[in-house]
Image (cartoon, rainbow, N blue to C red; front, side):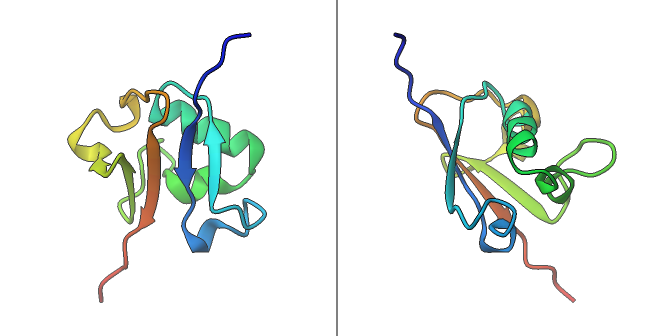
Length: 95
């Protein structure tokens, strides 16, 4: 059987109520966009917290792959490699 390393997604505290309080969930997606779809299938409601109606990552949500902001990579087309760590960080809204 083909053994692969999953990609880890670090779930921020405000979203953990959607993931049964899981801090880290694993996905097998090849891109960030696919990872969001995969999370939505497993945790309904999480996608709307991460992306807006047009499908773009929300302004107040930062997504990092191995500590690099996907906005400086290829956004949702950012490729994922085995063992990558994806961090979802809600930006603190300023007044």
